[in-house]
Length: 324
Image (tube, rainbow, N blue to C red):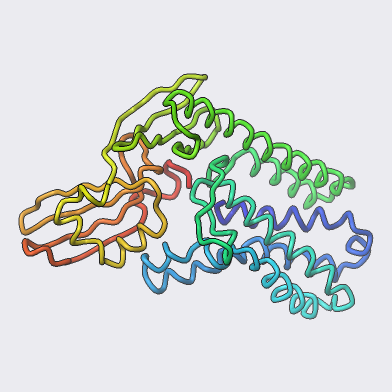
């Protein structure tokens, strides 16, 4: 999810920790747990430092190793023990480590619910896993947790009970969103007469409708599912290796294109002839929006099919859909 939401959940996890009598009774431990849950809620995204190596490296590594299966077990002591010591809560170091572990795990679980996905089962598999049930920013989760945090800051005497209720409702909400996703997925698969694995979906911000992509074999069908009805918007040809044009083949060794294929699942390629050569654009159809595909790798070639420039990433503002 977005950074603001992760940090907010770090605050509310610290509030939930007040249910532990030891945390409630010792201010130094409260400070340590708050620092640990804030840092733990953001720790998996420390891989953003890969931006310094360029967009291709960032695409390859973001939500990869730092979100992997052993990552929480590394982040928890790495952050928890120093924080406990710095806050004078060394006596309760393992308590701080435990809440750090909760924060890191909650971050990874929420990212798994997003359509972008995570490599959370590394080193067992490098496959990108995504449940496609939540947008990058979920207004309902944010509002609920923000309300609980504000009550805590305003010294509401029963804030701990509010945090317990909010996290119980969060678990129910996540289960409900996943269940709705499965129902819609089955309906879309039945509509096209295909296996569910051939359909991917994107939730809209408010959750009232879903964007989808269905793999038809030689083409992708894109559209919306809303009000129980399938509304197909367009069909796009697949980028199949045996049917690629020569300019497209010439871009396959480019760093940006290799990073793109490392991550993308539903691929469309467009070759355009320009004044001095060609523009080849590889797009991930999963993230289409209003006939556009904002996640892409674009490569400029000369007439001799030599790479002149390349660009990879999102061609949209962070607040614009799709929210991944």
